[in-house]
Structure formats: structure tokens, C-alpha cells
Length: 101
Image (cartoon, rainbow, N blue to C red; front, side, top):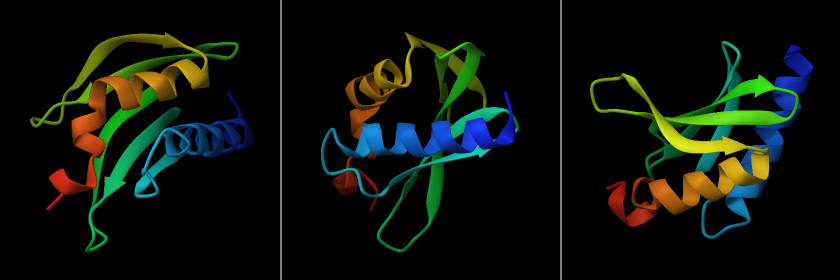
């Protein structure tokens, strides 16, 4: 996938996540062929929570970053819309600003 395509996909996924609630502190960046999903606390410190990996075409697979830094696949794959739903639905507590303090 081209860099410009990943950049566009990152912005699209970020917007899809933010539309699902109070998630203005959630950002998505293209990095090393993946879409990296981060949360920022009120002090501006960021943590990587998940990544969406292109599977081909317009399909992506979602993985969660464990506390040890390993990537664990999640039972979510499909469009960016489906990945946004998976991030919010399955990782909501990690995105909640109240839990970032």
C-alpha cells in the first residue's frame, strides 16, 4: 500500500473513531505499513493502543498492544468502519479519558 493511501486511511479511521463518542484524544498515524491507534492523556503523553493492518483491498485486521509491547490479534477484520467499531466496542475502557489519568 502506498504511503499516501495509508495516510488517507489513517485520517479516515481517526474520523470514524472520533464520530463514535468523545474520542478527540484518539489519533491514528501510518507507521511501518500499519495504522497505529494512540490515545493522548491531558498532559499530551501518548500511548499506542492498537493497530490496523492492511489485509488487501479495503480490508484491515485489528491487533491490540499488550502491556509487554506484543501485538495480539483481535477478532476484528474488515473495512475501516468495522475496525473503528471494533476499537470502540472492544477497547473502549482503554480509550476512556477518565482512565488515562
